[in-house]
Image (tube, rainbow, N blue to C red):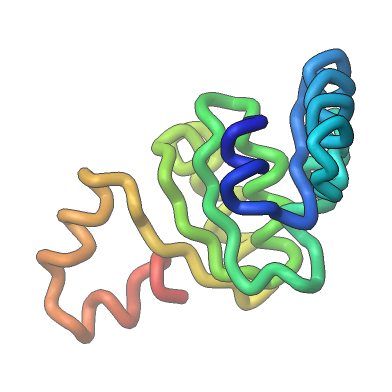
Length: 131
């Protein structure tokens, strides 16, 4: 994460692990990098719903990515879905939230995206992914 922050200079970085977040914060500060480092699941969810974010890449592996992805959906974001777990484990919850909050879900996982691209344009527009 340190190298990515040095290279891209994001406004925020969030890690679930408090100790790792503290270490990152210290290393960035020592380099004079002003990235605000946040910690814990709540912070990740808040960033996923941040008003300045137009779209959110949902790429956290496993169940750890479910709440941040749902937070982005509830904030009406365009969500780029890079993991299968969200749909496999909580498909109905996510689909209902997409409709309720007028969010968009686009598949970037290779398998999901290949299926999506093979659909006729009218089917893509009607799909849950392009809601």
